[in-house]
Length: 229
Image (cartoon, rainbow, N blue to C red; front, side, top):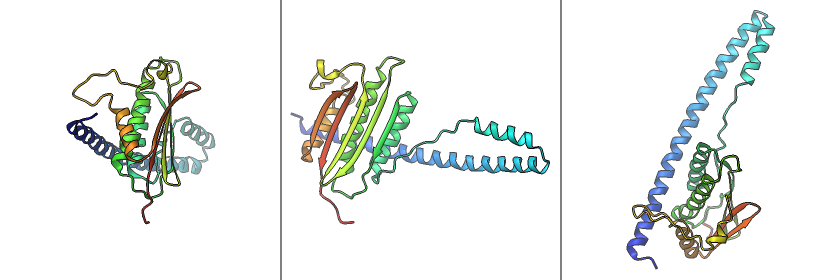
């Protein structure tokens, strides 16, 4: 049973995490806008170059120039637009984190209905689910599939958060309660699952952990009431 001080510390960490994710998301959005403006500028430059080559009837040079442009890989960031700011911030930031660590990251998020769920509760579930998934992928040996799949949807009066990740081995065999072995007193390591469970119980939902086809699956639901639009 958590003491009031522990609960306050837990809530404070979730708030700090939420604020950091929102700030990081705005940074990513700004970076994408800067990159988009740069590509637009470069595109105009390339068109001018090809126009000059065409006017000079240097068709072969035009063909080579076009091919050189086609050979340049373009990185497109698939930003999340779920309909909920905190979900977008979490997924966009965790996707960037996964890319940095060479972990495949897929998501499908639809959260356009306005609900009574607080951003703190959404963050307390989804952020911890994805953090646990990324942590599990990082320990998978090189050469094996490292992948995280996130699915979020609303149905009737429930919000469903499902996060799947490849694992080195089935964690439920040796640790069915998923008790953390980390003992860092300066941070709330090991409280991730506790945060999820507490939030799920507080919102009359459920939490289910499974292992299927090489993936660990964390499924959580939160009950909500619709707000007037």
